[in-house]
Length: 396
Figure (cartoon, one colour):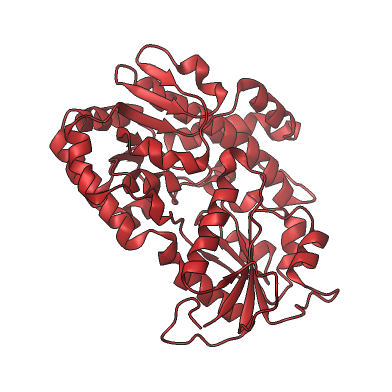
């Protein structure tokens, strides 16, 4: 089926992550035969307006997507939002408007706490779409064994950022006074129970009788602070446990104070540069996003694409979708991460096997082209078009 894809190419995000993902998605649609950001009228069955994370304003979104004052598209089209964070990262005012738009659909790689949508936004149509990576992130299949046998130059590669203490203070100040103390209990609870979602931890640690005129916004400010605090506490504990191993950290300047002994901080790297880093590393410490407890990060896929064995915190969806290709550890026990990384550093045969299997798995099931069928089926459903059985995305 011939489709036109409209997708913004310029985004404001840390490490240029959203802009890179948008370019990867645009390339994937184009390879399947869709017209990407056409400047002249084209003969198509429908148009897909796909945007990542949050628009600058609702008015700008309506104008870009060709929606009139009654939220009706001026042509047969689908409006898709791919949001790469937790539900509480979304603006409720935006969702109030979008959930009443019949041709709008929300897609997220996150599976955590998404059942709340049905309660707060009953008209919202939402589903999970896992992360994908581009084909160019795959290293040479035949070079995995040689690169490990010859000795990749980096030992354990750690990617990801943490907040500074000053940033945490500002986030804590935004939390209403009556629940600030309970926030520390929430962080402690999640430190001890890594599979407990924010929603579960919130219910078990917040004081009785707390009332807010907008409970969603209360949860948002608590979530922002506690997630950042938990992220710093958990990640620094894991990095400290890695002391003694050759560790390279790629991430924010807040890591500098922890770069001692055998741990080196190499600054930040753009998202598009990460595949080259993973192709040079023997092991990736591929922890998941702290705001999720079930879902995993695209860094797992990027590392495996680079033939780099992963040591990742144990998560339900990681088990289901990556399986035995990745070494897992209990996030409440940082020493397990260090032990798994040390074992891989000293076992070239295991690294080669996991490097090969990981790369093969990504090539077989986790490229963006493998997400295309889902994205197109959602778009067609939003447009009320029956899919053509022989086509996934767009050859006319």
